[in-house]
Length: 190
Image (cartoon, rainbow, N blue to C red):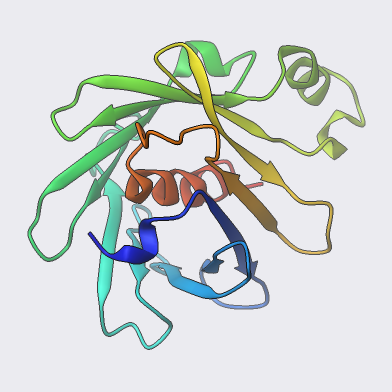
């Protein structure tokens, strides 16, 4: 595994005024780690995580599990070996009241979830006229305990902190964590 993934905090910055979705991911000292690009003009667009913006070395590919089923979820692969690292699937029933994503390992076993930070805030976001102005943060859980957070920063532009410092034993594969951060912004269209 690339040593750049050995972080407990990742800063995601979405580039604006570009065609397609592009992100830069930094460590907490703002040293560049990855460059991310979502394919343009495709219904089922793959997301590619590169070592840097030269795009010479691809580290992860995030793609729809099925071209025909929008609810099949997203799969995270090592593009070099083809190994499935894990996958994510939106929990449609839970997401009615509180956006929830299921996290699966490479064999498809459910290992955790990412959900909106608060049921109360989630309900305000959905049902009150100005609720959409509340920022949406996510809590990441494994084994019924919180191991991380995905926090939208109060800045101009889309900037996020993926904080996994509550997971010192590294239960959550950091490659999957980076993919989840990208997915929570991209798939939620925040």
